[in-house]
Image 1 (cartoon, one colour):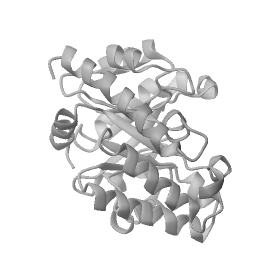
Image 2 (spheres, rainbow, N blue to C red):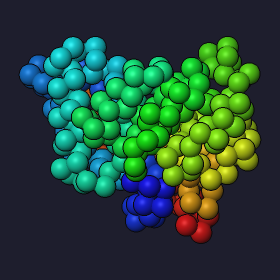
Image 3 (spheres, rainbow, N blue to C red):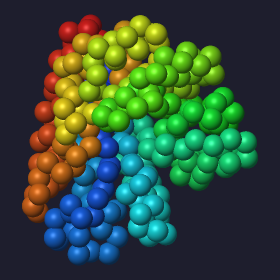
Image 4 (cartoon, rainbow, N blue to C red):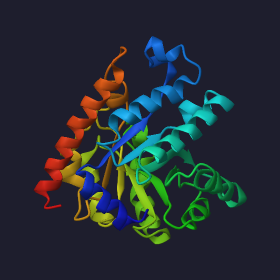
Length: 268
């Protein structure tokens, strides 16, 4: 999926919502937690409930890798299920990989050829050759960590995020490269939009971390929307009991409705 196709999908669905599949088995309702392949069963229910409101899903690989071979198998089944529900949904492997040479090439093959993800999150701090292998795949995306939403981003990222943005723009066009920009610093988001006017941003930090859709839209939206706002816990764990999927659908619908209002206000 290239940038124009992603934009047209956003226009069609009137949403720029990305649902984060941070599927922590310790938070599953008892009826799901007790089942074999509980992660996949949970994900399937969430996908069924929310896909009509989302343009993207973002499995966080830590929650799958922690389960060993079973977790990886359930991740692959999750991606296959998303494709079966709607082949045009944008799938982000939230892997935060960052290595060079043949290692980076193998990571790219793993996520793009074997898993069929559309994008991978990358830590770019080893430089260009840790990113280039991901940019060689047509209609696939590298998503560089620029300024994240966690408190400790101040330790390093505030000193270097402008350089990450500048170098990223050199390495990859707005058709193949995005940046992660946290929702918890809207003033920085506006600044980064001025530095990267055409690139898409993956924006975490809305909901549990305190960011808002309103602040993100005001600071980061461009003429092609340019935003994928990720919401994880506030959607997938909106309900704690057996009706967890109903609660997730309600929260996703609310987020998408708000997003549609900002798209309308921007003339999109």
